[in-house]
Length: 89
Image 1: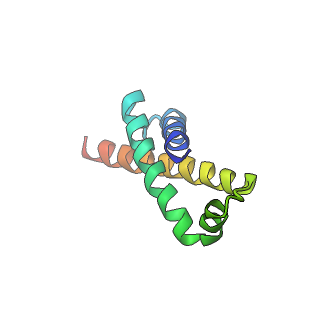
Image 2: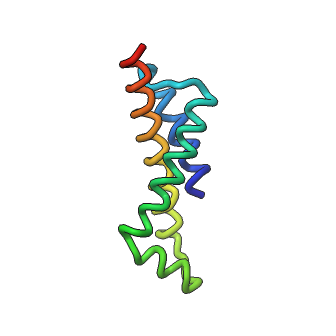
């Protein structure tokens, strides 16, 4: 979930701001990495999500939290890489 949401978030961030756009492949890769990383950090920060998943009681709220964190991570990493790329160009 985090990887897919990250890829979508990365592409959305890239297309929303041309200064951050890395191209479709670049946005997707940066989004996948960002979504995966932030998706791993959210359960550490919010242990209730991990406990719900382990207990088999994963709720819609937990799924939404993973999708939002993955999408945000993808968008954030794409924006950072795009800004650095444009700054060096």
